[in-house]
Image (cartoon, one colour):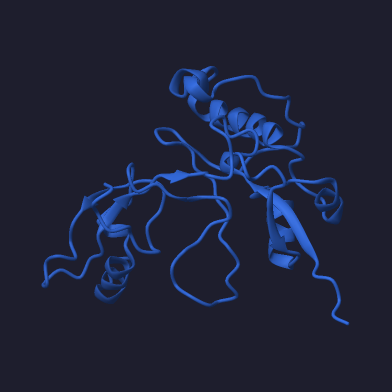
Length: 204
C-alpha cells in the first residue's frame, strides 16, 4: 500500500517585492527539479497585455545581445486586492511538501493557506495582510511616508501591523525568455553582454 502523499497548501506572496511603477511583483519559482527551461511560478504568471519589449536585438543577425523586456506579473490565484484567494483557490495551491517549498514559506515567498501547512514549518508571514504590512513598511522607508498610498491608491487599503522584525525583503508579442526580470533590464546586463565584457577585460 503506497504511503499518503505529503503536501502543502499555499498562496503566492506578491508583496515579497513591490516595484515602484508596477506594484506588487513578488513570485516564487515552481520547483521543476532541474527539468525544463521555461520559468513557471506558484500562483503567478506573466501578463501578456502589460509586458512590453523595450529593445529588439535578436531580429538583427549580427547582434549578440538578447532582447530586453519590461515584464509584469499577474496573480490569478488571488483576488484584486491581493489579500485573499480568487474564486476556485479558496483552499490555496497544493504543492509537494519538499525542502524547497518549506524554505520558501520560511523566507516569505509563499504564504500558508491552512493551519496544517502553517504548522509544518516556521512561516515568515501568517497571512497576505501581514506580508503586505511588512512590504509597505519597507517601501515607505525607501520612498517616504505615505508614498505607497500615493503611488498605488487602488491597493492602499487597510493592512495589519507587521511584527517588529518582519523586514520584507503586447498581447501580439512573443513572451520573453527566462533571463528577463520584472523590472527594466539594460542591454549591458544581459548574459551575452556580460560574457563579452569579461572576455575583453572590461570588468578589470
